[in-house]
Length: 273
Image: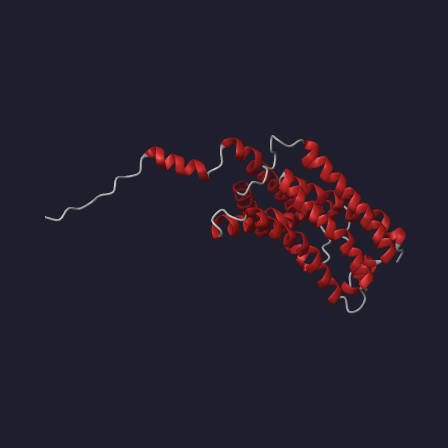
């Protein structure tokens, strides 16, 4: 008579051990996922305010597409996936106990402010933003104040999610942990980090240059790359060393100086219409 072999059910301890290796602890949730959800709550608030009391003068359909409820939902999910992959590949938590507030906030903010000041100097020399406004048929390159406060603070969250917070740890995890089965993480990080650092400057710079109908000059493109490329390289380094708040703070500092202060309060004095 044939015997039917029945595999014993996994023990509860084995199931618990399996889940504990893959699910974050309560402390990890508070230090990363909770921080991210608070940032997304701000993004949702910015969306509500832009629809009610602080309208935003978007300069392109691409900018407007960042402030939709679909975008808020998508970036929330992408950020959570990125956090899980970042944790699995050794990135610090958003509010990592090993890092100080100086490292994850003050230092990146200072770097961002310095980059913004450098951008102003480059723009005064090259007049790149004025040429950009002409090429795109817009009255200016910048979103008007006070809507710019919401647009650039919310936009910083979404841009950094796209270029860094999701894409970098996800690709490092996918290649080194899944495809290479835990090998080559450092090499993968360097390669993907270099691509992440160069993607925005190269694609955006070349797109604007080639689509500028000859208005944008090679000098203007070089001036843009002079600040955009170091900013993106530093964002990758800071993300790896200090967690996701560092590149966000870096971009917020740059946006504050270049887009909000210069673009709204000093630009017209430099380039009178």
